[in-house]
Image 1 (tube, chains in turn cyan, green):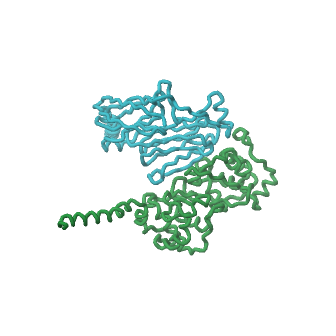
Image 2 (cartoon, one colour):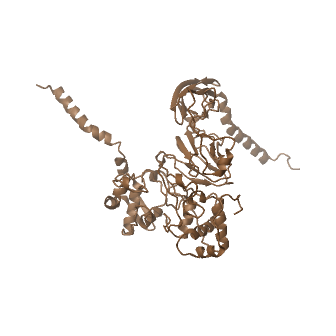
Length: 247
Length: 288
């Protein structure tokens, strides 16, 4: 009678388990990782964000019939919390932490003739997706400086167009625009290593930070950048709050 | 009387002061550019050498494109569209996908063809060798040519016979991907977004008017027009439609665009017989 447990099958099972352990190993290593949390606030009254005249495109006007659109240079909560600020570790990360590219795919949506989110942060070489939820044509036109190694491109996304998957080679704050709807303006913020973007309350959490001492940089599209030094203990949490002044 | 050490420090100081401008000039892009003088180009069996184009560039190109190839020549303030910045190496007329470098052949063709409705004339007076040398010279201005390879040229299927059906399909496509947003429903560059268009450097730019008799910027063959919307004109608002128009459909759009143009064509005749109306921007998708 044939052996019920085929040795070849057993062997391949063992190999599979080993491979899985190796892949998961990266996550297991992350167990000792800590995080950096905090809140970003805007000092003083929120600047006036002017409304957007979308009369060029009746579809866009209709989409905002009950909810007028405003430019999003500063998105400030009643508490003063500042949204769309990108936080990243600008100094102190070991080389090993820099080579790991997150598997998640951030999504940049063109919805109701505005970008959602207004600011999309991502790691160098991390794949991101550009999609459209609109029944009007857009063109997605990021404008990096070609001398940095990131090359500008320009693709159309008419209604029903398939999503576009892309990535960037170098850290850079890349403006992105739609030429068809000139008010559509957003950012691809490409950084090296762990990052976070503030939510509508201005709070953020950078996860997967290995223990160590770092410089955290907060970037806001108009107010500029600020830095703070923090120390993260193994599995611990460090706090870095920032306050920007409107420019 | 000066001591010997005073003498030495004086000498050293003089040398340091004289050396200062030398040290700071090392930061200038000129020297960086000169390190790439060995740049070559390959067009068919012609090999172009940057160093051999130095004289021609100084004589014929520098006035607009500038000493450093940054498009900042002495004529810069007076010409529009502005001269290309060769340091950025972003080019309109390519056979390669959006966001990639053009092929040597693309640059070679642009020099020969010139750019309609701009101050860039046809340079047919150059021999092929001279043009190939100029291509290499244009490339030597940007470090991108050392770090990147030109894109793979898009594949263009053989041109089918034009039929009334194909023109109608082209019209549907024109409506679906909404070319009219900039180019207008009659191709007159008067679409709702036409007035606010800007190039990558924020300078106003016009959409192509198909009806005023001018030739498309990157050539006037059917394949040239096909290439424009499947590669996009990098540096301008014109995007690539490669993801949204199938290769065969693209010919139908070329045929439809021909019906706007003043030149006599089969397409124009057929459109007349079909009594085609301009697309209706308010019609729901698929109901033109």
